Length: 60
Image 1 (tube, helix red, strand yellow):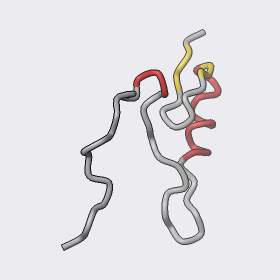
Image 2 (cartoon, rainbow, N blue to C red; image 1 turned 180 degrees about the vertical axis):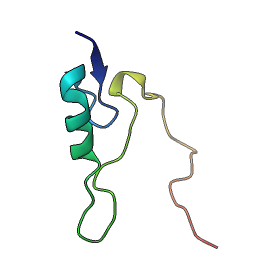
Image 3 (cartoon, helix red, strand yellow; image 1 turned 90 degrees about the vertical axis):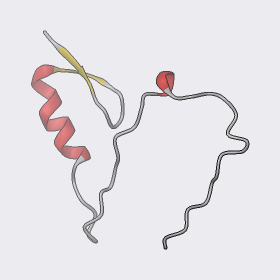
């Protein structure tokens, strides 16, 4: 059976379970905001220092 990796929690799931699982991640909070977001798996995230990278964003 084909396996898919969830782009939210990065679990490996059987094809038959993937769609239901994925839909759970897409549920909205009462205020309409997303509850969860797609992220890179930990093994694909940059591990270098973030020194010198801006940490604050200001809207114009």
